[in-house]
Image (cartoon, rainbow, N blue to C red; front, side, top):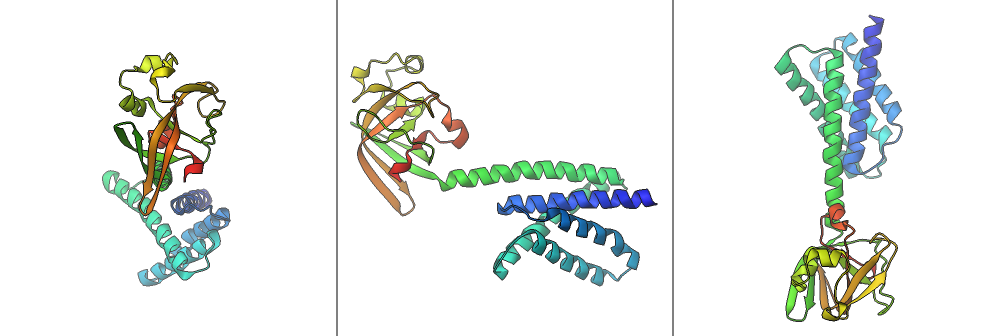
Length: 269
């Protein structure tokens, strides 16, 4: 019996820790004293059934318990913020409860180890989903619509504002916007990928074309830089335009991280 109680306490503690951590991840806040909240939650979960309370009283205690755990683990100054945290905590708790209930309905009575297994799988999946969601939101926040005009050609792409892009053209002294070959080829269709990648491009055919050596985003190598006649950067009410902008052709693969084909310079926003 003692072993079962200890096992039940340990599993409740772990699940509470999962819920608190995921709540913090959902809110993009770091939970504090999670171990204390998890311990209190586990203790109450074990001793509460011993009192054989009416369902209504059990529900009320669980509501108050959730409020206590939220208050311990997260900071808030306004009641509205508390409600947001509380609703997030309850929602994630229901996900774990629903997962265990569905497993029980499918396979019948389940052991404590199965409960822990199901909870662990839910935690892993929820963590991946929330991290993907947070990353997507960050990318959207720093994404802008970018129009690049060169001669008679105009290309519109989604650009990502990267505070780490501090590249400047040593010749023109202008900040450099990086683009992928996919964007570059829309301006210079006669220059194939291999020639561009091997830096075997006749710069005389490029508008103000020249190579510069850098040691950061483009992996410490030379990149082809040319000048666009004009670019427009727009997002909702924000709109700025620039003339004679330095554009760099990058093969660094930055588009894999942000999902955008244009990497904006921090000075241009």
